[in-house]
Length: 485
Ligand SMILES: Nc1ncnc2c1ncn2[C@@H]1O[C@H](COP(=O)(O)OP(=O)(O)O)[C@@H](O)[C@H]1O
Ligand SMILES: O=P(O)(O)O[C@H]1O[C@H](CO)[C@@H](O[C@H]2O[C@H](CO)[C@@H](O)[C@H](O)[C@H]2O)[C@H](O)[C@H]1O
Image 1 (tube, rainbow, N blue to C red):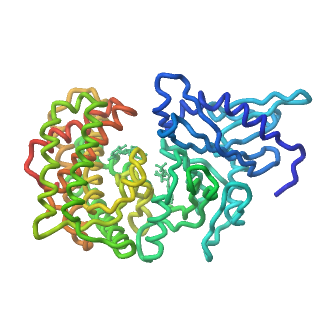
Image 2: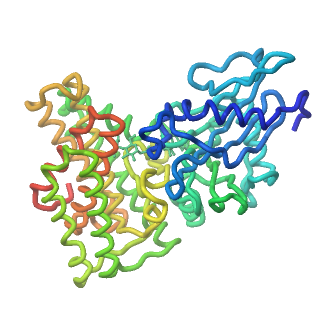
Image 3: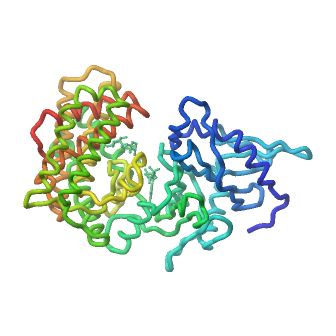
């Protein structure tokens, strides 16, 4: 690393961050900070501050603890520290300023937006640096190029991803969870298995055992998957054409069905590989009761937060009641590690087929729940929900917004598009050796409802205009007889 011309005074930088971060964090999409409600902005306490690169600009890795004791959350912020003369960082990447008596002050800014600093971080991963409170790991044989241009991915995310050319993707984790990181665990298992549509993990960074909460993953580097786009952009573009009236000009109901079928096949291959590498077993009666209790617990919490769910409360509760009985019968469902947050935004259409990404699970759920073996049909149910979302989104586009009056031919075409693609996905899944989801209707419906309840909470918090999408699904699920598509 280049020798510093002037040393950054880490103590002064941390003092300024202590002051300016709470306000800045409150505006980040990835910052949940629920415990701070009622006191604005919520207090945060730096628990790790490492000077990763001492030059100008310097790079500081910061972990802060937010919230009351016993309800702590940990967040990571990578802070660039540069002389004011070096050109001000744009808009909301600016976190704070440290004035200096003998010259221009220091700007503190979001370092993921600075390609120079991201290249430093990459070099550190490549070198397996283990200075300070953070260790870098790179498995033998995992080689990657340095010197590629870095760019931050602008999509709204739970974390922050930085691409290096079209070769590497670095996921900087934001809300940190002590313990094994599910994405790293699952990508490693899939790589071990070999022929599966997933990105190879290349390196990662974690705190040392000295970190107060225990070893915690901070960032994961993986292969970049070149693609034509993600499933959400491809599916919604195609669904909008169909809902707008052009279904007949292409294959039945709009021509996405072959893609949906291929996606079902890719999902089944991932499930088979995860079961092969990390095991699978029957869902025992005790576990089935625990599963039913977990779904009910989540529902009860959601009911407190989203009053729009209340009219369906009683019927939703009954969907969980059959689960324990199911596990008592001859054909007990198998459980295994699953993706955990599968939707059309989590799949990329690479030239050779679909690739699944983001194996972190639902970021809002505790780690222990996210790592628990589940019936694989849980992922299937989540993807089926996503086809439903894509159809509604297309309908919003055609009608001019979520609050436009629905009904009529576009609404019928949207519903038909969803049914058709959901069916194609389930067929593809069964073709590639996955257990046919249509043969587990009770489980499928319980998981679809659970996902829709999770989505209702997610939408109420983040995109209230979209709340009608999961609510419509819940209405359908509580009234229909259980079926796959
Ligand atoms: N390995 C990869 N190759 C190419 N693009 C990727 C890769 N991983 C993620 N992306 C892109 O970055 C976006 C965010 O990644 P994701 O893992 O979903 O982050 P988050 O956990 O923050 O939701 C994805 O929607 C995708 O466009
Ligand atoms: O940020 P993540 O990708 O981990 O997932 C969260 O955000 C998703 C939205 O970006 C949310 O997904 C819901 O909306 C999608 C359309 O935007 C839709 O395709 C999904 O089916 C629907 O669940 C996801 O639930 C949430 O965890």
